[in-house]
Amino acid sequence: MQPFLKVDQVTKRFHKVVANDRVSFDVMPGEIHCLLGENGAGKSTIAECIYGFYKPDEGTITVQGNPAGLTSPRDAIARGIGMVHQHFVLVSSMTVLENIVIGTDAARPILDLKAAAARIREIGRRYDVDIDLEARIWQLPVGQQQWVEILKALFQGARLLIMDEPTAVLTPQEARRLFQIFREMTADGLSVILISHKFDDVMQSDRVTVLRRAKVIGTVNTRETTKEALTNMMVGRSVELRVKRDEHPRGAPVLEVRDLRAANDFGTEKLSGIDLTVHRGEIVGIAGVAGNGQGELFEALIGARKTRGGSIRLDGADITGRSPAEIQRMGMGYIPDDRFADGLVGDYDIQSNLILGHHRREPFARRGLLQFRAIRDFARKAIEELEIKAPSETTRTRSLSGGNAQKVIVAREFAQATKVILANQPSRGLDVGVIEYMHERLLEKRRNDFGILLASEELDELLGLADRIVVIFKGRILGEFAAGTADIERIGLLMAGQETAGKAEEIS
Ligand SMILES: Nc1ncnc2c1ncn2[C@@H]1O[C@H](COP(=O)(O)OP(=O)(O)OP(=O)(O)O)[C@@H](O)[C@H]1O
Ligand SMILES: [Mg+2]
Image (cartoon, rainbow, N blue to C red; front, top):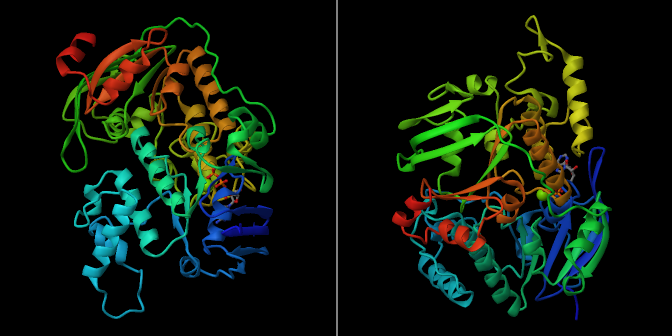
């Protein structure tokens, strides 16, 4: 059988950075082909080359045996290659139908919307995707917004779909559904290139190509490999996939939240009376499906979201209603889940981002003057310690790979916080090596008597790290579990809100 896509010796450079170094692999019809590799290994770059967004400096890309000669995504679409980016490019005020048809056939003067809708419905039926074409994008959960992107690609005639970290923002149920859709597609001979750091995803593929430092290490059949073997190929050493947490006595309360209430940007109540205490030397885990108030809770705690009631105390001091800058100065560090929206200024370089919010303080400033050497030294040390893949400390953060951008935030917040660290989905999009590093740092902070509040959709991460786990559902805490006795089934049920509120009150 002839491969649908063949990538042959592709090299792509950005100035001095070699992002892809003679990369070769192929994708068969009906195959889910996974690209795996550390942050900055070159996965997104090769995907954008296949999608015609970047032009390779060397090498060829062939589609069904013909050199593709791609110079734009338009060419790629014409050759049956579609891509769903991690940050969707949908227009949120428009309907599903409008989003699917806009830009699809600009050459045709009158677009037959009715015929288009009928065809989209047919595609939806074929792949078992049930979606209201008249709904506006903003009304849909993320999982369904992603279906719109997929339907759009299929409507445009995609035979190969490139998905860059598609499950990063999905609930476990949504992710399962996505793979069902992939399997319907591959049954029809369509192919999927999947980029993901999650082994749950990777192990559902047919083959895996591992990239390390811009080069292909090898392609293996998923059925014939293991997580451990893949990790080894990817990082070049074995990685501790389980965290080792030692006993540590907890101290006095350092973060006390009482009856906290807050709304989202649209005025809908998202926190309906949160009670929560974090002690020094303790990691408290928040389990919950994304969108149940975690984001609003963290924003309220750091002063970026107005509260409607309740109080927050940091080390005994009432910080309710104070500004983010004040709260940060009082010792709170924050790792947000949306790194580009809330954590970094893309147009600033790495060193500026590393001191953001602390640039008026020693050692970065003295008598109102910036201390460039101190800033540079701090940045170089962070780059080395976290293995941030970038040419230098003066590289703009916008050009960093997703995982490397996250490392910049982690370095800044871990270095600056003195009492409490808040982390919302900190390992999303990070490779296993970096996750291992971050877990070690979190445990080190715990040993140094920080209070840590950690929200994660990965139950395994919470079970490995947290001393206590609370479950958040629709803006309320439903139940609390000690690390040792945490019952995964119960936590799962509470996460889905499948226990009556009355019973939940009893637990908490
Ligand atoms: N537009 C760009 N300008 C300059 N350098 C870039 C650009 N895009 C990517 N790079 C660099 O190319 C390398 C590969 O980046 P890429 O985004 O492909 O990594 P990745 O494997 O997708 O990583 P992640 O898992 O973190 O998303 C990195 O060193 C990155 O900084
Ligand atoms: Mg990437």
